[in-house]
Length: 215
Ligand SMILES: *[C@@H]1O[C@H](CO)[C@@H](O)[C@H](O)[C@H]1NC(C)=O
Image (cartoon, rainbow, N blue to C red; front, side):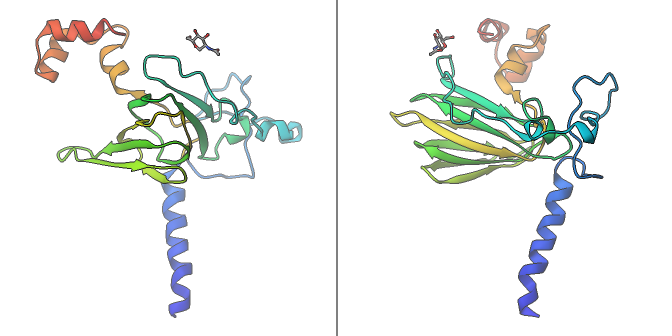
C-alpha cells in the first residue's frame, strides 16, 4: 500500500494541474491558424496535413534583450504568438533580462501561474496575496534557484546585484497575458479619472496627475 502512495500523489497532482491551466486537449495538437477569420477561444486549427516542425519551434532565447529602458529589464516571450503549435497546450515560456538594479515591475498574469528559474545573477522576488491579507511573500534568489508566482497574483523581480541577471520562466497558459499595475492604473487610454484615482490612493489630484504624466 505504502508503495502506491507516490503514484496516487502524482495522479492527484496531474489532475489538479490539468484543471488549473488552459482547457485540455481533444486531439494531438491544434496548431494556430493565424489567417483564419473564425473567432474562437484561442485560435482555430491549421490543417493537420500542413503542420511542420517549424510550427513547434522558436529560436532566440539565448539572445540577451535590450534592457536600456526606465525599468532596466526586458522580456522575450515564447508563447502562442511566436510558436503556433502552443495553441491549446496550456504552457509557454519567457526569458527575462535585468540590468544591474533593473526590475520587472509589479504585474500579474491573468491566465497563468509562473515558475521562474534564475540562470545568472541574483534577484529579489515577491508576490502579494489577495484581499484582505495582502501579505508580501518574498525571497532572494541566486543562480539555480526556482520560485513560483501563483496565477493572477501581483508579483515582481528586482536585480539587486551589480551584474546583469537572467531568468527563464514557464507559464501555465499559451497566452498568459500581462497586466503591469502602474501602466494599467496610471497609463490607461483614456485615463481613469484623477478623482477616482485620488480617492483610491488617498492622495490629492495633483499627485495623481504627476504620476499619470509619467506614462
Ligand atoms: C537599446 O535601446 C536603446 C533605447 O531604445 C537604444 O538607444 C539602443 O541603441 C539600444 N541598443 C542596442 C544595442 O540595440
